[in-house]
Image 1 (cartoon, rainbow, N blue to C red):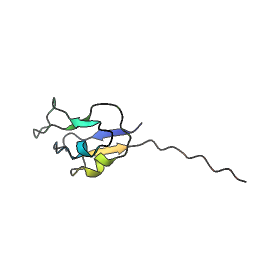
Image 2: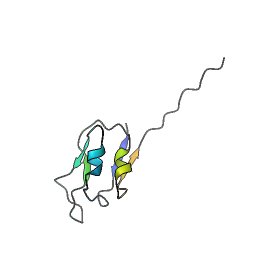
Image 3: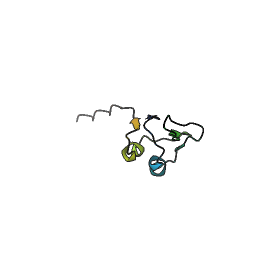
Image 4: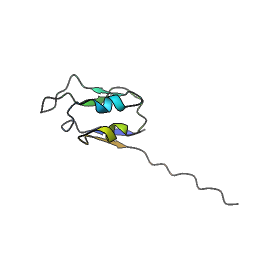
Length: 78
């Protein structure tokens, strides 16, 4: 399962990541404010695929996506 880390103090609540998220698991946290007065993004439900589109569109680089690296099976030798 991917891990998404959102630096809430860098997030300005522009919602670009919310709009770009294919599985629609991001939203603005209406219950929290940053020190600058913005509602930061947060993951509100399961279903993140780890595609990292949210991190790519974030203008403030406030999102980092970590994916588990799996070792591919070695091809069989003839």
